[in-house]
Length: 188
Ligand code: SF4
Ligand code: SF4
Image (cartoon, rainbow, N blue to C red; front, side):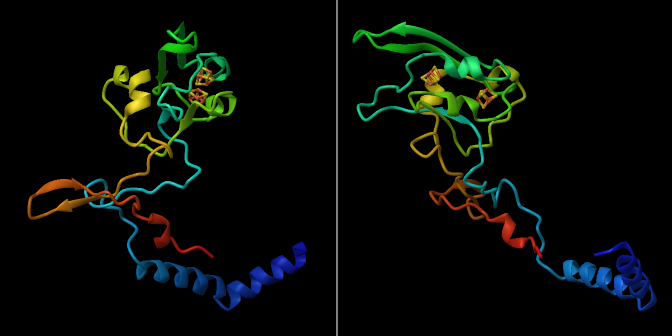
């Protein structure tokens, strides 16, 4: 649209209060639409998009062996130098990580470690609830990366929580569907 057409459109809009009416219609539309306030974390939890990159996890192969071959490529490519790998040779002569730590306080969750891994041993899951008052707690070790709940094959779904008002305790359900916050957002 040319500048002249644009200014004519604006002039007509102001003359007939069309712009004002449009703005008011939008405001009133939102006033009477459903609330988007989330009752987090007791009743509702955020369901991230599938491409969301959260807490890392290490994978095992079919025999239950850790897949990581301690090649340190993830540590080399990491832009924040927050991965530390110390290799050792196991009884079968395989190179494995004796120490594998990720400092999630420094991590950008860029996913480069996952992309660089030649053994498909590390991935970023969907977990986002691991904040802490101590930065030391945010350094995640090998065993926790292997065994933490929700870090299994798919990286763990976000478990929807319900507040059981009769028992007055928080009950975690086995539902993998969280609350779809986005359905309350009206988009044009
Ligand atoms: S996600 Fe990125 S910043 Fe975090 S550990 Fe992996 S490479 Fe490093
Ligand atoms: S996670 Fe992958 S890239 Fe990192 S040390 Fe293990 S095998 Fe190498």
